[in-house]
Length: 106
Image 1: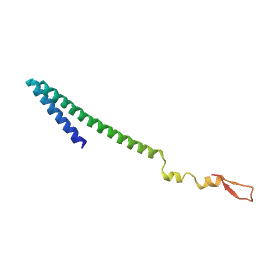
Image 2: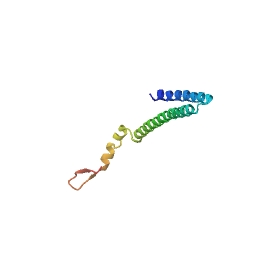
Image 3: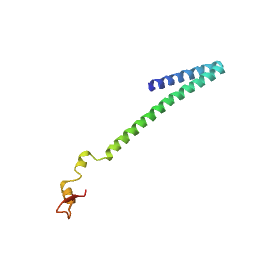
Image 4: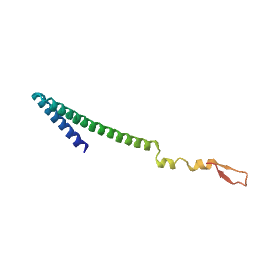
């Protein structure tokens, strides 16, 4: 949709600047002024649509990059499961003085 509006304003700008040149040729300064102003407005509206699309694309790229970086910072779920092995758990158990009961201090 924005591409069509951008193209429409570009075409209108060219047409209106051509009309301004026609009015300049025939000495109609009022028509020259009005068509030149409208042509300039159309030109800057087409530039506005271009800039708006670029900003939206940058924002989408930035969000996608943040999404990718967020998932790269976290380890995979399998590596979390392998973090503690059974030997680590057994080594962390210590004997207490209460008749040989063990307590896990993880």
